[in-house]
Image (cartoon, rainbow, N blue to C red; front, side, top):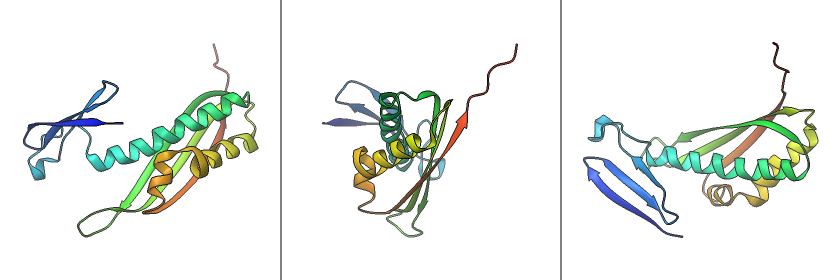
Length: 143
């Protein structure tokens, strides 16, 4: 796997993946950025959430759960001094569907967090990583 990062101007860069996709990264105005893209440390949290979300959806679909929505909220606490690494990261899963079985959702979240998610596996070597979940029943739309 390989990526290419190209400087645009000031604190703005374009990152291009080996699979041909690109995203804009930018710094805050305090460091000369224009706030045109996500910060690198935000991308780290996004990577964790999206990697795990893919696992959870795949596991739930294989177990025939009727998932209609999945939202992952990831929050991180950073060190006060440079390098301002994450000292704690918390992942909160909100899984919505029809007649979802709580044990199945728990199993999917546990498997992702403890076995399948590569980003999670790397981050828990360097920081405290916690997670929880909630299951929501989809309510029928009223006409």
